[in-house]
Length: 340
Ligand SMILES: Cc1cc2nc3c(=O)[nH]c(=O)nc-3n(C[C@H](O)[C@H](O)[C@H](O)COP(=O)(O)OP(=O)(O)OC[C@H]3O[C@@H](n4cnc5c(N)ncnc54)[C@H](O)[C@@H]3O)c2cc1C
Image (cartoon, rainbow, N blue to C red; front, side):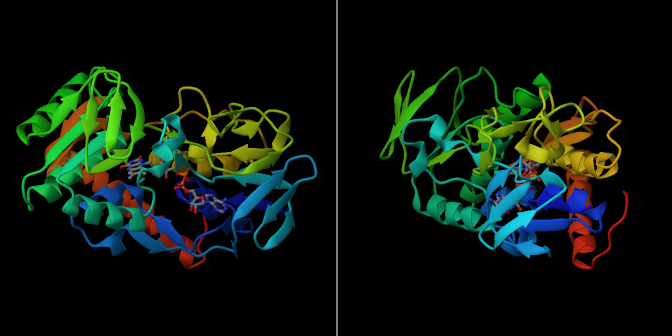
């Protein structure tokens, strides 16, 4: 049976580790350790966020034909019996007018560019107060404290940062940022960006550097037939297969399963799940969120098994998760695949 895995990020490597003979296809030879990108902004070695990762075919996937079971890549056509779509996400910059011109943070190169921009800017505005926006602000504050005075603003649609975290964590993060002189704007909708102006439902903010962290979307890939997708994410059944195309699965951020977090931890779980389920479709995927930890300035805060966590324990949780991921990438590189 010919199994193809499109995308070798968190979800894809986890599937490949458990499906030795599947073809892993990715446009890049590198795995981005996204939780380390904000550390690159605050000054950490960029090499730690970009790991070499072996793939079977290095090519960009352009089109998937679900009926004829064909994939069109920059390297030619491929056919498959079973397909796993694990092509991740893109920053959904088109959500706001003028957003397509903003810098985004998806790769190590983006993080280095962001660091350079911050160093040159006197004022920075971050759009979005979820994990990404807060971590970017957190690393900016950490970097900026080593530089001169800057005006930093975060604009958030809701009434608190990190709405998916316990209130205690949101309040602690807001406190850290306010003490560092960051301006927090709540209940404020960004309507558009024009040059160096952020136009919001309340006021217009002028900033030398504007960063978008206002949401993600699924991958840019043509699919035939034109099936319904949510924000370019693939709607999946509870076994992660596509409705009407049960030989095709979507995992990680590419998949849309209502109520399932779009985190790296869940992407890893879905990769293992699909690998086990692909030949005997019997089980339903149940996400088991363990930990979600963010770093703000020098502090670690987050949630573990539904409870707020801070300090060294939170830091250890984040570091263990990163170490485990690096180990998985290394296992791919030496061709070691096994059920985990
Ligand atoms: C700055 C930042 C920090 C984050 N921090 C955390 C964190 O601390 N904890 C956490 O749980 N989550 C974090 N996330 C979210 C986490 O990165 C995602 O949940 C995770 O990457 C999703 O895994 P994935 O396998 O779906 O996608 P990805 O890991 O993005 O993998 C997608 C893969 O598909 C490949 N690909 C895409 N399109 C194509 C194409 N057309 N052709 C060929 N290959 C393609 C890409 O090259 C990539 O290798 C963070 C995200 C960002 C941006």
